[in-house]
Length: 475
Image 1 (cartoon, rainbow, N blue to C red):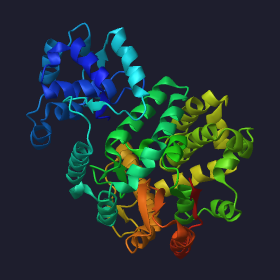
Image 2 (tube, helix red, strand yellow; image 1 turned 180 degrees about the horizontal axis):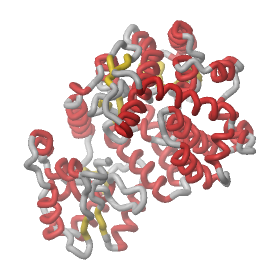
Image 3 (cartoon, rainbow, N blue to C red; image 1 turned 135 degrees about the vertical axis):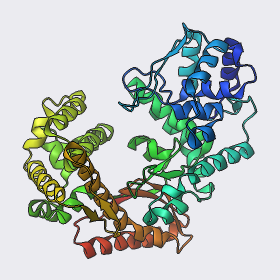
């Protein structure tokens, strides 16, 4: 979430809501409801307990006891800053794992100013929203250090296999990000302004504005410790849609594992048809898009943004198919995700593609095998227990299958981290589970290092018999 705004915008908020006074907790919460997470359906701010506690400066109470009550703060903010007519909230539900959602009614002049503020370029007069202090690189550094410290509070949850990755990504010098962002920020923000869907446009603009304030991403493991993956803790480059990410990181080199999850399943679940498909060199996303009557290569050449958007729906669907989503839910998900591209009945057509039907049957066999097991191991020899009965056991099995695949995914890419730690010629600047970005500090050596990076991953894949490789290029 962004830290800075124009002085003009802050003065407008200050004058419109005099109850904010000098109460930094109120200012932090106001910043959150202006620029923070929104409900996907209503577009209103999601005000979970953690978000409120963070605004109030009482995260320690929330994390160390059951004594924190968010409602008390919300009531004070309502009384002092806004009113019952302009600020209210829904109940939260522990059973449904749903956070409170706010209902906020800003004056039209504030609504107009928010929209305008989102698309201002590199501001020279920007100030920190909460304090009104002028932006400075010194304060920017302090903010980064605070985010880094917060990331490290999650370190105990980190899988041992991912600890080196966590340490590497959270200790990168900021200069690896500052130059590329300063050079490309304006172009990325202008591209975000052209996004047609209003909520997606708003979110991407906010991610960019946060990148401008903080510059680099920081990472945390899963709080439940149920995956080797690490995830961004702050709005960062990793959260940009692909076309914006390519713009703002122009000059970096981006790598992705080709059909990572499909190739892992093909080998570990012993699916001959998948292995044959991968050996043929055909691309699953191209094949699936063609299956819908769309010329995938032509679409990619002429409208890469739409190609990437369709690919994302299909990639999420393939992942869901592999790890337990029911046919009914999968069909609903695909129908909803693809209809905006003019694809009707996308769910049933997806399952009629021969490889998807084969994959579904293989998944069912694998789940049946695991239902008779008490535990399994990951490629790192970590034991995963299979517990429960009925639906709870099925859910556990789905999670175990995903964890096993994610562990293989990391195992395939860890040689790149080992390589990066031996040199200053390149830096891994972004980590995205099945891919990563690299900044070559010495461009004269980049071709040699690209070959080495490709080779160490190819060697690891060949060792496992997994038919995948790195794809990518200069952005």
